[in-house]
Amino acid sequence: MSRHSVDGESDDVELVSACRAGDPDAFGILVLRHQKAMLNVAFRMMGNYEEACDVVQDAFIAAHRGLAGFRSEARFTTWLTTITLNQARNRLETLASRRRREAFSLDAPVATERGEVRPDPASDAPSALERLEAAALRRQVEECLGTLPPDFREVLVLRDLRDHSYQEIGAVLDLREGTVKSRLARAREGIKACLERALGAP
Image 1 (cartoon, rainbow, N blue to C red):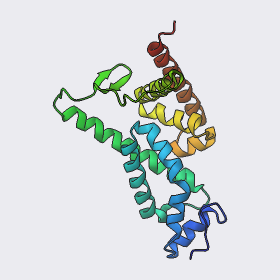
Image 2: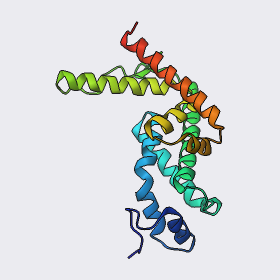
Image 3: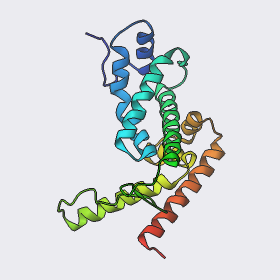
Image 4: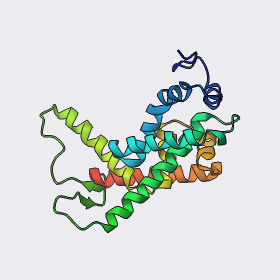
């Protein structure tokens, strides 16, 4: 039985050290401790749950292989977020390249200025009007997030959805604080403009 726990009795640096020393349970605990947060980041970048799961799986594989390069003076979660974002960028580039090569299909999503829209509704299950409106707004926000360039999307996800500090975001993305703030402002403007177009705001 491992002496480590998922709820934080030992910190990440201790777990990394244990993993390097051959503890078979240590990395599994790191996965359990951080997989939800990394999935949240990946989903906001990818806009697709299955793709996000693949990104997180690849990120943890890369992290395990690269543990020797982790510097203990850095936060493990910052290092892991950087790897997750890199995997998401790679996957987005792969998907974009694949879409450019694929022939048009009548069953394919219809491209709009707000993103991709499936020809058929996701579900026809009945629900209350308020629930429908809330779900529609969430979908619209996700679609608008997907229209942002990846470098803007990253900053918005880390700041507004993951509540990282400007300093942490700069460390993850290797950016100056001023650049982080500038990209965040432009990302927020992009989301606002997209929502105004979609919702018919004046």
